[in-house]
Amino acid sequence: MSSQNSKVLLVYSGGLDTSICIPLMRQEYGYKDVVTVTVDVGQPQSDIEQAAEKAKLLGTEHYTVDAKEEFAKDFCFASLQANGDYQGYPMSTSIARPLIAAKAVEMAQRLGITSFAHGCTGKGNDQYRIEFGIRSLMSHATIHAPVRERNMTRSWEIEYAQKNNVPIQQSLEKIWSIDENLWGRSIEGGRLEEPDFAPPEEIFQWTQSVEKAPNAATEMSIQFKKGIPVSLNGETLSAAALVIKLNKIAGDHGIGRIDIMEDRMMGLKVRENYECPGSVVLLKAHQALENLVLTRDEIRFKKTVDLEWSKLAYEGLWWDPFKTDLECFIQKTQERVTGHVKLKLFKGQTTVLGRSSDWALYSEDLASFDSTTFDQRESTGSVKNFGMQPRMFQHLAEKFKTQM
Image (tube, rainbow, N blue to C red; front, side, top):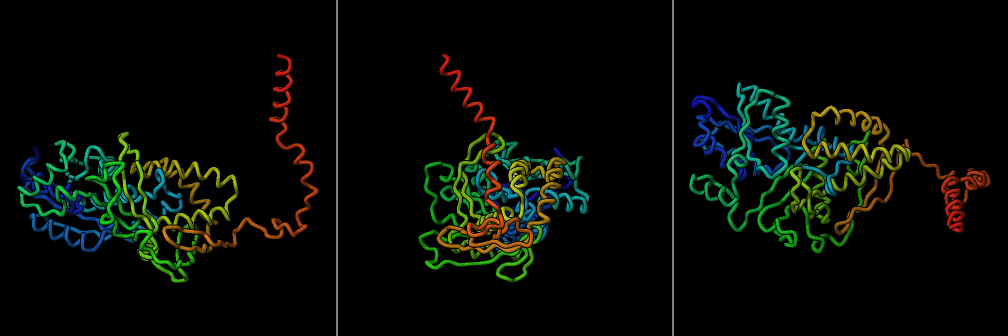
């Protein structure tokens, strides 16, 4: 137990898990003062305001940190340059956790606090991401994880909240757990945990169903500079503003709904539902431009680098030197990923219509069937000798087969 006069900083979202941590820190952990910090990485403004109101209602000293622009520029776009993907979806929650941890440490240092608490469960990934971030930036920190340490269930949490007058939105019937930021929205919990349960339409907020999506397509152009999107349909926008606008446009067309069985770090398979309209479109456009300007060996090797980067990002290892090493290669390739990509959005699908760049490794004069610039006759020798060793193997295999 801690000293009654000591303070603890609670990384606070305003949801069920973190809200019950406020009375728990006082009743079970002995902290007299609970300080809450909410880091705004693109949650709905109403959620930010409700978190602040709830924290103050529960008697905490509360702070809100606006980190949307930093998140979009330094985290979302870093993931975009690495084609960040885990098992088929753009990572969103995982890349936000390191920034949330960093901002929590900044606030703790400002207030002279060395004790932290968070609402992560012992079954999920966020416990690793949050605690790695805090310990990387404050090695002497004390960290409490009440939900994990007390082996809580969601039903127990709801009952505890009701007994302690903690205002919550969840009920035993609607028990969804939602995490949202600029890059994506995840929904889990309740019957969504059942692999064969069809998600109800009510869980989706960013995307239209394909049935309700417009019957007319939307065409757009995205401009990239060094792998970073800088304008949408010719309009220059800040990083956060571009992502927010694209989320709305793509979401209206039913783009970005992903339902997968995900392998968590603990080895558990879990059913996850995601909405990530803007990031799905940006990843498609970015890869289309990379395929135009990078050499085939760069593309081949970068797939391996991107996969390794994504694994580290998924695990929240933002300050791992291996990640920095990988980013040296990634950043070098992105120096040429500059140009425009034209796309069509329609009924849940994103189609690349065209791409252009001053760095394009494409020559119509060389590739066209109607051009003689590339002298086809010069291919004769290389075609004749192509695959020499496997051809020799086949002849030997046939020879020895007849001798058996």
